[in-house]
Amino acid sequence: MRNIFLFIRKFFNFFFFLVMQITALYMLFHYNEFHEAAFMGVANDITGKISKRYNNVEYYFHLKKTNESLVQENAMLRNLLKQDFEVADTSTTFRMDSIPYDTTGIRRKYLYRDAKVVNRYLIFPNNYFTLHRGEKQGVRKDMGVISPDGVMGVVVNTGDNYSVVMSLLHLQSRISGRVKKSGETGQVYWDGKSPSTIFINNLPKSVPIQKGDSIVTSQYGTYFPQGILIGTVMEIMNDKSSNFYTLKLKPATNFGSVEHALVIENLQADEQKKLEEAVKKNQ
Image (cartoon, rainbow, N blue to C red; front, side, top):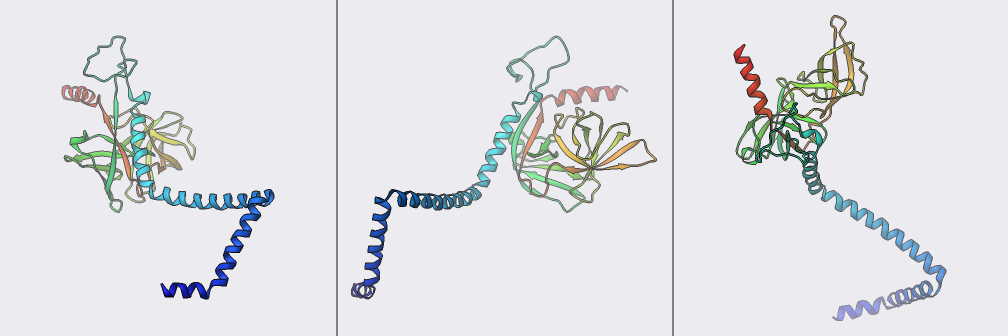
């Protein structure tokens, strides 16, 4: 206590000056409208800048939670898309209570489930992702997987709570793609080299193609709904000995930073596969 009094006594003049200065400034700004307005303007500006920086820091630390919320919302919205419902090409429709329909009576074809990427491989010719969703959460083999930006790959193995996805960056990956603006289809593949480049071939040279054109999933196959972005055209590789183009694409998905995915279940895939296999056996 004695040291405190000695400290105050030593700096008494300074503290007295400080108190008087604060009192003078208070009277100046409180009883003078011009100075009060100027002070409030400066104070609000400083407070605003401090609040902005604080909000930026707070937002950064909440990014993970925000991303997870956006993925869940994305899955919910995709489950409401019109193209995820498909009616049979017939004038007669049979309805069963156990089959999900939308409000117009059209049978749902695709169902989306959000999933978190917990592991990934990008340094090999054959690359995979691991998702924290498995059979207990409704994931099975041969389901398509997309990121918020575009196609990622196809489920090839499942456990109770995890599943492994064959990435689009895999030498055995083959996906049917089409030129968005013209509708011509080809096969999308990877050459095992750069993770920032994929290819699509078997496109006739009669098709008008330009750099920047979008390549999306086609209506063929059972993994994906049509219209999901695969990549954009970077280069048109014109082989003069062939009547077909090979296009170099920039993948829509950034495979090096993707953290969240959507697993797509085709609810009508089993019916389609059974019919196609039955035809093959009879040939």
